[in-house]
Amino acid sequence: MRGANCDSDHFIIRTIIRHIISCTYQKKQKYKLRWDIHKLESKDKKNEYEEYITGKLRQIERKQDVNEEWIIVKNVILESANEKIGEQRKERNQDWYDEKCQIAMKENNDARKKCLNKATRKNREEYEEKRKIGTKLCRRKKREM
Image 1 (tube, rainbow, N blue to C red):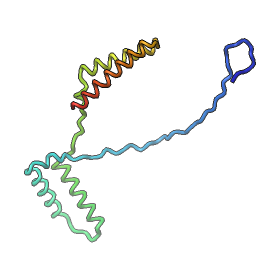
Image 2 (cartoon, rainbow, N blue to C red):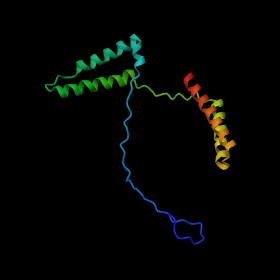
Image 3 (spheres, one colour):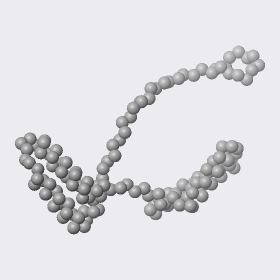
Image 4 (cartoon, rainbow, N blue to C red):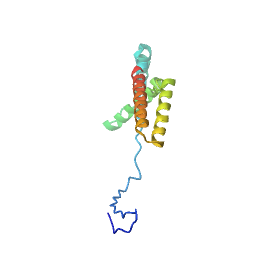
């Protein structure tokens, strides 16, 4: 918004501010438990797991209520799976990030810093080229894994 000309390089600014109240509490997602089902591929482990479940189910008393019966059966299955099968550990596939990727990312970051310090067309083109090379290299390494 321009005001009266008083031989100044200052301008009056008019703004509209929209304020949104953000959520203060977000419920964390519960970790989904995964069983190591690859252990069940061997017949010995599979038979051991089945026998363990049937032994536990024979020990429990029968209930008249179906919901109570289901809760008991569910708990028996979960306990036996936890004891005999175990949880599957989540492996992070970061073997692809080797020395070549590290060097490419360092060059990318250096070119970015140079472009931010001195914004010339040449620096911008160098940064875009380094970013393109680094992205392609990392993408190729991930696919190989």
